Image (cartoon, rainbow, N blue to C red):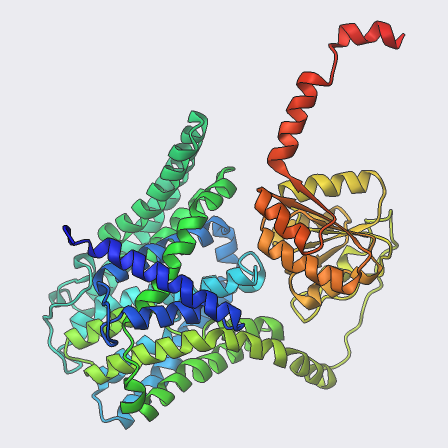
Length: 595
């Protein structure tokens, strides 16, 4: 080979094997991320054969974390974040304290020092950004109240870990380690111990506050202005480049200048950009890279894992896993219930946090470098991370299975609740929106009473136009949507809604597909639309299915699954242009013939 290309080799091996094993996992109905982790194990240093560059893989994974948090920020506003602070801040702090105590208890049983127990417990207390966001995105929960609580909780955890990273070097001597170490923490995070503990804390909090102020004062004006300027150039390539440059640039600048984590910096960049009217387009442009690099994150995690450690450290690994999956989950569940939130919210939050990831690895490396944490502790953290990530999708499945039983039990023990009758129905398609939206956090949505109606999936740019036409024609219809802001607008307009993802069996059943006349799929995701088509055909073979697509391949895919009509946007635009050019006479020529 004439040139040494570790970057290309790492990307090719990582993405290639991730695709192969992800496809195999999907074929056997296992979450694809399990396949990505297996791919990482195979290209890692602990298995024979090709070994990818672990350093490069970790940096590529960081890009995935940045783009993921940037995408989440695009769906958030400062108001959304502040709306969940009452539970996210105390909840995250209490959960971190509880998990740290459990980890310290296990380290004591293993004969480690107090400093080792502190580092070990902190590493087990913080959830992985990538895993949590992927779980929320797959269930389309980012914009729901549950999603906002989970992301707010994650932000508090990130801030706590940034503080831990700057405090540990200052406290290393007190905790039994060494004060100076060759660590992998950015220089801006490494503050001299001579500042004192409170000095380090004060400087760190001042830097975080300075970053927030800069983003709210300067970023709020500059970032939307840049986007609009580039959009007016008419170059899609420049717009895509601007989006990526802003996401990566703000994240990197936040880490280097203010000591804020890359993920947190990217989140704020996305949140500021969300105030622009072009935020939806920005999210679409960053999506392909976001997915590719998030896959590399799981590959990089797999590279760190030594399969033989399962034999040499059997029971300590099981105990570590129990703290992550059971201890953290129970703590989060109790906290959310104590704050008066519904059972469904508590279950979702507890499942989301039942894993660890990137911050845990950073803390483990720092602890080993400071001579606080033994290498066995780092191995246990890595094993716990891998196993908890693999088990996390199963946690969601278990919660989906347990939720009806828990809700039925809660209903038997709860006092009766006085119900208020709904107001009288208005026109068809404008009835009882409250019935389908009020209790959507407490279990399956109630079933509609509509019949011979249309089911409209999605109420974005296309769906809102279709809904307006159905409403004007006085045709009965309801909308299945999962974005809180859109649901509130539909409720205000008196349009009946079912909240959630239509690919979910309970959500789709609430729309009464058996009695529906039409199914209109206004969502742009052809793969998700295909699942809904199959579900609709199984419930009602005679239903008329209309869908949208962006390519001939998507048209064939949806028609093959049972769609009656598939509208491809580009084709309809071309047809409209042709009709305008060839099919219409000028007004002055048509008027005499009409007379």
